[in-house]
Image 1: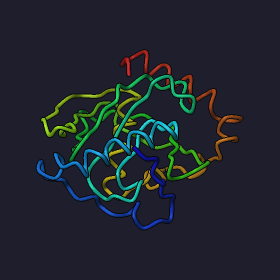
Image 2: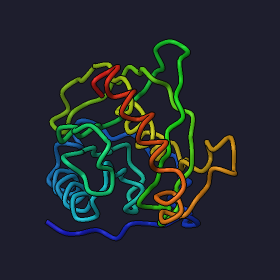
Image 3: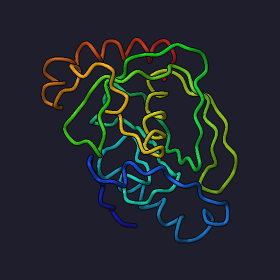
Length: 191
């Protein structure tokens, strides 16, 4: 396995709409090895998720995993999840303001409106169908990663640009209030 280079904001690969993989491609050693590298890179960077185009492969694959993440101590744990060709559909109209950061947008955070409840359809890494609902703060993580596959970064969804902050200023001025809101969301939905 290898640690892959992570593209940062301004690199055109982050604006590409990722192409779907066929089940035959997905089963190949090349793409299975890539998924292993994607996971290792995400873990090494302490990311909550990582999309393929963030590591210069514009295909519809992303990894998610939160286990006592030091970058996001308020996030509920997410078991290691691989999504291939994911589609996300909001369930209902309720949204919440998520203070997001991104490995491809180093040292910046901002508030982004996210659906509080989403339905996810995808394949797992073996090409088996997945269909499940995600609620709360965890729903924001899923939306963030799938956005990457659509050529979007969280800054594209910022409604109020005055919420953009460096990581240090987020911690100093905004983190306490956000963590309080995040914990309420987690308490309400468990995720």
